[in-house]
Length: 445
Image: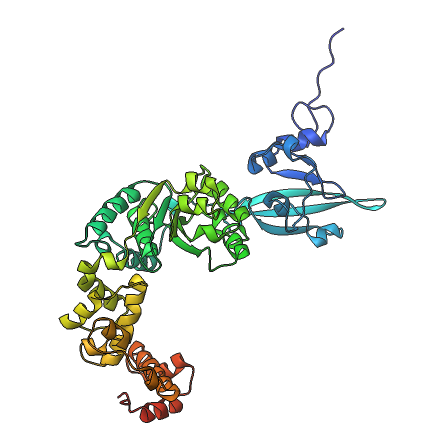
């Protein structure tokens, strides 16, 4: 018998099907579609959904789509809105996982499926909004680029050059570190300039176009560091961070240290570079049981020693000039004052030097800094003056001296503006003027 002529499928049926099959229909569409059961568990997803998410249905089947704290980024992105759970069609814009800041975003449309006993499931449709732009393709405004270049110009190799052999060795090591992407461990006393060295490495390296982030392991609570890195909108979810400088990682908990190891040893292209700064080497921190051994082996590949200021006394004139410039103190300093500075032990290193120069500048007023403008204890250590007898330590005189120095410092920082100086000191301007008159200080013009 001749075969009956085949009838073309009716309009709306997938090609090659004689009867409508909803699964085949969704399998062919380019729109990502997923179905959630009554308990918000994933029951079905089409190939377009698998391609968008980067996971198969077999791997994701049964996923509870919820926006709770411990939910995965995918589960949070697919979580139904309260309106959808109440039986009303709804749409929500969600950050595309795993990024938490976007773009791109997902516009997820939820269609409730009502049954005899209420809601029996939901059908979801995803539309991608705002495709992400690679970092290399982003256009930076000219004003922002100018500010960035000006900031980068303050952290060049010239900042580290000097006559001492220790600084010559450090500059060579910093140049090598800038050419590599390996993690760096900076060893140095407090105030020796470890963060400055880290910024020089960053601005001379391949990641100079991205951000430099500094975190204090001892000064911040562990949950704050964890939130900054992996919380909502955290640094781990964006690709604009080039270097993370972590101060004193041995002060962190061992759990957080392990999280850092897992994150910074990831081979993803967007993983930032880690530079650590500490007063001791990584090996010493491991021996003292402050640091995990894996942190030492994986995240301290290059170890650089930042010399203290007492080993750089030959560079002191240049360091003083640079410090005055950074503090915006347009001052000159006499050679006799430099000799007094060279005779100091500088246990606080560059940070202590900056504090001394700010105080001496306030005492000097409009003229150059002389040795008599330096703090009394420095002149005593240099043998220029004798220490004050203990009987001369009077409370009122000491308080007046401290108050006078604070007022001079505030006026120096504000360019002699009494109103701004009063705001800096936290008092009213009339009170500041009365105290200046009582302390025989010249009123600003």
